[in-house]
Length: 459
Image 1 (cartoon, rainbow, N blue to C red):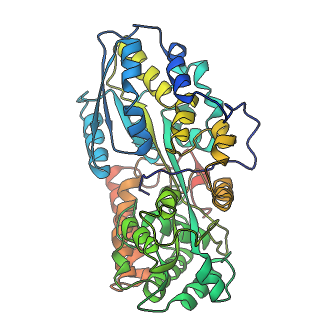
Image 2 (cartoon, rainbow, N blue to C red):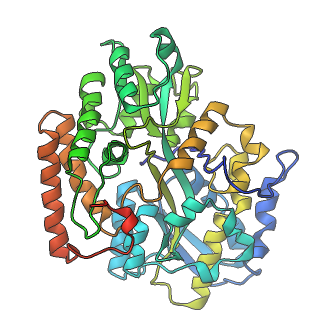
């Protein structure tokens, strides 16, 4: 995505096994956070240890920081948080890890960074250090999967999202339109709902970047049958199917979007919906809290929610998560134990219930997801939309490879020019594919079979 407000992603609610959850009524959630500390570390166990944590401001992360004193008082450890803007965080942790600078013991790490960090040996595997009190099986299976590499766990989530269709119920009803279930219906509805200069049918991200335009554009790529790579790492995202998907995405922006939206990021897309300027957006669950907040939104009470519309090859909601990982530069056994214990306590079931009780959501655990506490706080339509999306989103929505961000940014730079009218979809994707192939050749990965053939195209 990415944008981090107060997301309440409801993952796996339709098929998750029964999990014993804390009761919603008369529950001392804060007390449970404090009383759980001995389950993760003995009193005074980490006296003299300092943990430097590279992170960024997220509601869930801020909630953890607001409770750090509990861990420090119980264990004797000292914790220092360094908060960076989103893109700066990524550059700092890559530099710290690749240069073996050892400036940080814990990283706040995107799940799509796991292949890069794990394959380079920049983070510790966690399987051997997970304590029974952590209840790892309570974490949604898909999230555990995105924090794994070669069958080993390298991180634990603190935030997760999918994309859904947000739409104006009043505008669709007035136009006699049903909620779009297919991408063809979405285009037709967007065209009919475009009444400039007052209202436009849709807004989508056009701004370049793997976490900007590529994030939702991938839904169209996959929905029309496109893929990113062949089994031997040749770019195939300039196929006929990929070009078709890109043209449909571009048509929505250029024909039914506000002027200039070919260079919009998530901020302008979400603010235009909040302001009532656009009838529909396909965006992250992160924005739900702002859309229902009367202090921020002009469309409170007018919003509907649905799973993303399907193309000829199905529906592909985007997904993203960020979590905590232990830097490989940590070699001292006591410090390693302190880092692992902290990230488990910080993302524990007790902590997640406590922050959900404070309306600081994003449910990464089945127990919280199925709790009466959560159900008392969310719109039922939203719950269903996100549940439907989480049920079909793919772990490998984007290729989980170390080279993803570089490749994604190359694609994002080129497709922005399609959305602004500067290039055809074919020319843009051909250029991105050629640049990617050149990089892969220089890096020595071109022509080499990957260990996960299911990530790639069939031919």
